[in-house]
Image (cartoon, one colour):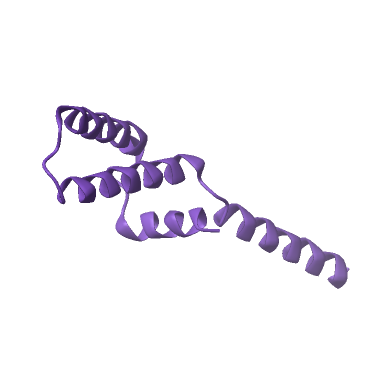
Length: 88
């Protein structure tokens, strides 16, 4: 009986760990959109942006806003946890 209880508790713990550290695709998409915007913004600081560059910047900002809308009110601690799963 003790062995069965131990197996059940152990299995539950493993399932909990896997579910807590699972990758959140929406968060990863948000982070990727932010990285693209940051990279492009850094390039625009090196030169005068053309009209096409300005349009691309606006498009990248809108993409980031859409992909990150669900995470605007998330705590920094929770965001860091989810961010870590994207690097796995």
